[in-house]
Image (cartoon, rainbow over the protein chains, first blue to last red):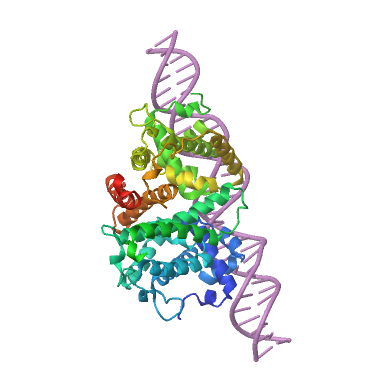
Length: 223
Length: 223
DNA sequence: AGGGCATTGACCACTTTGGTCAATTTAATA
DNA sequence: TATTAAATTGACCAAAGTGGTCAATGCCCT
């Protein structure tokens, strides 16, 4: 792979990982202009000099993160399945496909817990100097065709009058909501601020919602 | 009503409104420590001196906003109904009650568009100097009994195996999700950045989801 | 030993920060 | 209209924070 930031790419995985996550968290929380390099390098456990050595500028760092995140998101729905050969398109059942995505998303969330917040906020970035570049990246990515979740899907299994697109949307809101709910629960139960999310707890609750949805939106013969 | 910030309370409504909303937006977006007084007074259309004249300090301003927002949220589920006498507890049907709340929430969202983001983020506030005070306010509010949405509710109307608590949660995620979705849609369709949300559009989409949920989670005889 | 890369953090000029206050405007009263 | 009290302003302040630089150092491989 050709890469502009080869100094960064050549670092060992642990360090790269820390630098990515620090950026995602701080940029994601405060936005481009209010995010401080100082905070980020502190969180990443490197020196300020190093970060500029890798990326040259705050802007470059931000854009690199954005591109990285965008690619990860694409892989989330587009990438190879568990067996690394098939795509999830082999499965034609809505909820089986969903299960596939859930597993990928879980892995990604464990790897980059704050990436979700980051990409969600980035497109709203107002800072003039990054605004245009973000749109440029978006444009480029938009051209690449993304696998459609609904391609070759057994939509007939849904009860009449149930819109599968809406169901997918509903479930995606669920997954977000479940995470927030458990975070909030941890917070008010005075757990240590930096307690990591218990992903089993998240998954378990998420599954409960999906199960409820499936049981009531699918035709009985397909349950 | 006794109030500590009577200088603020005595202002005319329009000005108070602007000051509240500016605070909600900026604090809500950047968090306590990164939110700049300068930005807020600019947005509120007043001078920096005035704000300190009203509230004395950034911290006081923030805490006032938090208390205000918390009270509004309580009124949202707890306050008087449309007719200003009855509470929504008169209605025993899940979706009728929900309709009541929807209308209140709508009014509140129109009045304070950024209050939701503000109270959602505030409890996670890390800044040491406000952290404790937030928890104090929370504690005080927690003591006051809040009307329970499920008091005297016709839960039997739900299909067997459907947990009404989960349904309520699901719908609340919907309402959030619908707003985000339409905001994003406006963004990518290159609408003017400051285009106000079209609440009719939001409501219409929200209703579609609620309708789908009701049709599939309620026993047929109650549709 | 020495050459080249990786890494550091003190340092820079500059901006922004929360907060102050003398000066001015506004509004009410006499 | 004159007097006074309250409301409002923005220039100003010291202090902290900003993105970015670079000489010095550390580290690894011949």
